[in-house]
Length: 231
Ligand SMILES: N[C@@H](CCC(=O)N[C@@H](CS)C(=O)NCC(=O)O)C(=O)O
Image: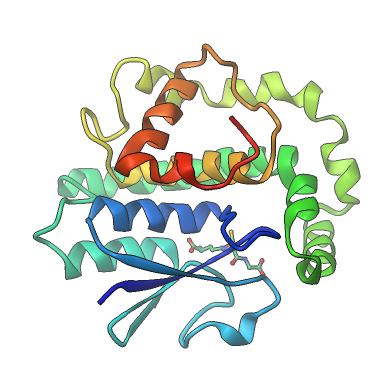
């Protein structure tokens, strides 16, 4: 039976943009597991299966409900040990935490400042007021103000990607010759931006863009085929 994934859509049900859900989506594909996705909007807290933390991803596998992308990755690894591994060694599993923390403290906070207004523009109208209010509280200002100087901030943002750039110009994936869960964590952030915004975050000749292209090609072009405004 297919695993059910609750996933965040834009105004169109098939535009999936959550960075955390993309981690799970890629992890399920890596394991070769069948998935049925359920579009879930920010304001539909009551529609999530229990237990949950009011956030997606949430998966249902048989009757087992698992939430939080990291917990889901661990669950899939333990439940399906004979499928391709998300963490090719114990060391990889430990080092993936560093990648996750870097993504969540540097990459994602950097990215949101470029795309937050586009998210507001492209989510369902029923979610717009909630999104604006919750994010303006978080940023302490209007979404329009948050993105206003984004062109000026772009060089500094690109500079923060140096550790990733210096890695993927020497090897195809963070996992080495093959992708691993660490790649899906970082890729989720870029796919988030790409799905919901046409803002060009990466220069065409950036090795990070080449790596992102390799990620887009995985699993028969799973992410590339998904609706996106970005290239
Ligand atoms: N730590 C969680 C974070 C999940 C998360 O923040 N998801 C966002 C979507 S990208 C969400 O559901 N937000 C609900 C809200 O803001 O109300 C994970 O790794 O799964």
